[in-house]
Amino acid sequence: MLGDGEFDKTLLDDGIEVWVTLMGPYLNMNTAFIDRNAGLVAIVDPYDASRWEEGLREEGLKPTHLLYTHTHRDHVAGYSEMCIMFPDLEVWGHEDARVPHLLGHPVFGRVDFTNTWIQPPLEEVNWRAGGINLTVTHTPGHAPGHVTLHGHGVFHAGDLLFTNGMGRVDLPGSDPESQFKSIRRGRQTLEKLPGSWRMIPGHRYDWIDGTTPDWVSVKEALEHNYALNSIDGM
Ligand SMILES: [Fe+2]
Image (cartoon, rainbow, N blue to C red; front, side, top):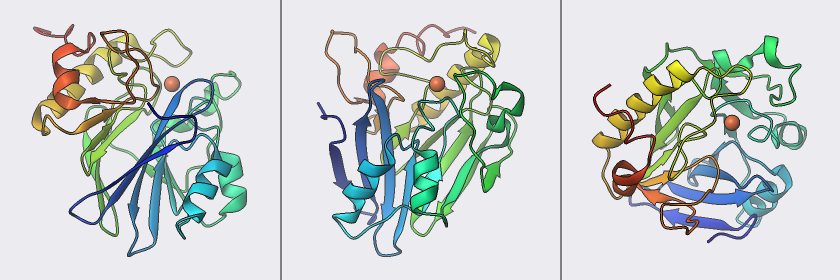
């Protein structure tokens, strides 16, 4: 199990590095996709800007892109500090995740995206930077404008899915009906991916056997995640 702020680093055959870490009291999982040759570092939902800066600096790297699954406060915790340290960052999220009408609620945090995805719910788009090539799927329900990102051996689920469950749908801006559709869409996506890919949850919660793994394989998630298995026949 990863310690707080500890990085798991994987170098893939395609030259892209994937770093995964856990940060903070809410057990947020962060993933970074790194094209070292091009000097590109795209981090999904960075929780602690200083720890990311330090970890990357040790290897001569710095963040170039922030990619947001949604704008709940814990997921955007590192945003302001990141922007102060790296003012040239590209900051990406779905247009619907700006949620100006919900920013008064403490569960949300404001992010001024420099670029947005605008596809309708359940549709996917390709996102590229250098050799980093991700598929971004719009999966609202837990929060407006929620997206998942997959590529380079990982499916980063945000709060659509945890290893054994799914994100809450009782928060301001949540929509249970949309969540069911998004879960079904997530299942379709996962079924097309290699079973050995890692399913990185937005938070590290308990798995079916009481252990608390950092991630499970796509195959394990499809077999055992209760949300993915409660939508059969819908
Ligand atoms: Fe969330």
